[in-house]
Length: 438
Ligand SMILES: Cc1cc2nc3c(=O)[nH]c(=O)nc-3n(C[C@H](O)[C@H](O)[C@H](O)COP(=O)(O)OP(=O)(O)OC[C@H]3O[C@@H](n4cnc5c(N)ncnc54)[C@H](O)[C@@H]3O)c2cc1C
Image (cartoon, rainbow, N blue to C red):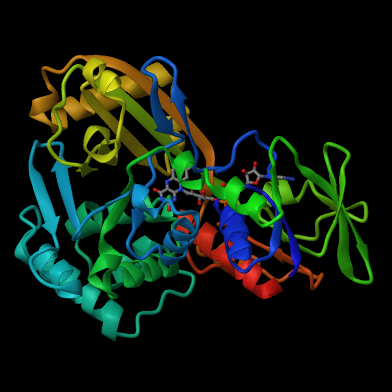
């Protein structure tokens, strides 16, 4: 059985490692940080003693590669699964609405859900359904287009664009509509809404993200492999046109049979091959995500999550309904929500105190039930390099898994997966990289 070295312990590297271990390969995984998970990890908030993530993450039923990885790790039971797509919307005028796809099977349920949206006039709902039908049956072209270009070309009225498509675009592409690649939006919508009913359901972590990948070390060790954390690969050398060995920051040299580089582009640039910079194109521009965790003296939100309209904040997740917490923590902090702001460059420039105030005030104006709640604690997390900025110009530049050396492959959410920079893209790239080397 082959040996494989995986560089990077984010989800791409973890998916690659799990897939290789499943095939019976001996896997060594090297991760620069002291923890696994990369941009999808959790830690303990010291004030509340509650585990939080580096930002609220959401999955969908169409995350087949990620679900496959979690099944290998035996942690897919930690997912909170919606039985059918249901998304609540709340706007600054205090109105709420619900996209409920549970009333009919599969894509018909989604169509019926759109049809029954109260906050969109009839003309707008017809336009949205027409676009959905064209997505499935028509020949929509997206060459070089942004999402906004596409939505306008498809005759989508202003209210549908801003009240239906924009929350989806921000959440899935982490880019403003006038910058995000339309091709990625179509892929996401087709995958989520035109397959099995389950594909469109939102899946949310019921435990800290790090718990999902915890069994990896035991899995690799059982196969004769190992996980090295706080250790980076800094240089590789080649022999006969193959990667021959990898030098770690600890000074150890690992002889390479096969290798997957599952690190972001900017990290790859720091790894040398035969003393030269890694042969790679440009590093894509990053796009930040701002996440805010707030604890209240009461549980004031009835929904499990809500898309918010006409506000700085975009999504609110009710952590008390979605995640399991220590009963003592729940007693001390009965209300706990996570707020996310994707493509949050403007917000990321403000102070944490200011961001907490903005979020708290907007929540109180969106949800009358929050008005008497006392804010006990807030944590602001600014992930400035959350994902790459997925513009139409960047799409053709994303590199494929194949590298100049036949025993090496590339993985990561930024590679040419055809998907946005998501946990699913990362996992799919990891699995594909291992299959390329099989
Ligand atoms: C706040 C936030 C919210 C998000 N929300 C969602 C969401 O709701 N849904 C969704 O699907 N996705 C979401 N994402 C995106 C998702 O987290 C990422 O797409 C995914 O985790 C990327 O995984 P990766 O393995 O490609 O990269 P990374 O997670 O960056 O992993 C790369 C790893 O390589 C390590 N490394 C780098 N150089 C070296 C080296 N030389 N040697 C050894 N190790 C090295 C790094 O330390 C890192 O751990 C979100 C991201 C953020 C930040």
